[in-house]
Length: 266
Image: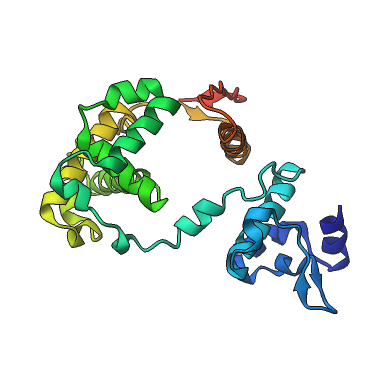
């Protein structure tokens, strides 16, 4: 295509593409589709992006180019991944936890609950009215267009694994697992949040781990996958792209996905 022609004529090399993409807004590939005479970007942006800032349009352009490079075709939705890219720049200190402080299910939580019931009825049944703190935390993320619950949960999982590895390196045979309560107390971000709110966040993260995303079993004997991990990750990424593009059309969406690896070893 046009980008491939521009890429080759510009003397770029494929092994350097990953590093170049990491440059973000300084990526040289953003020069593609630039009209040197008028100094305007002639990249075919979708209508919903045309009136956005130059910075946001560049993020979309990078996503589209990268998708074409990885999958050999343009994404169905040219705005793919834009929300996630903007979310990384979100200031978490701007998030208000007022709804969690009251302990009541507000309108935003009820709206999130209805969305959950429509998209994931089974998950909605599991949470229902039994986990108001979990629902409120999901609603706060929904209001701010920020995956707050996932980020907090991932932060706890990382800290839990890191403590386990550190304790094992120090010679502990049966390390004591990090609890959500201890993690909340020592987390730099949550230390800036009111105590009555962090207690509810702890309950929400605990509920999330029990009802939705079970924690890793540390020290368990598991087989080692004997295959190319980069290829496996590429398939997972393709599955996420598929779900994102099709789920936007209709709910609910069921998608069965499995990977057969070359082999495993203990």
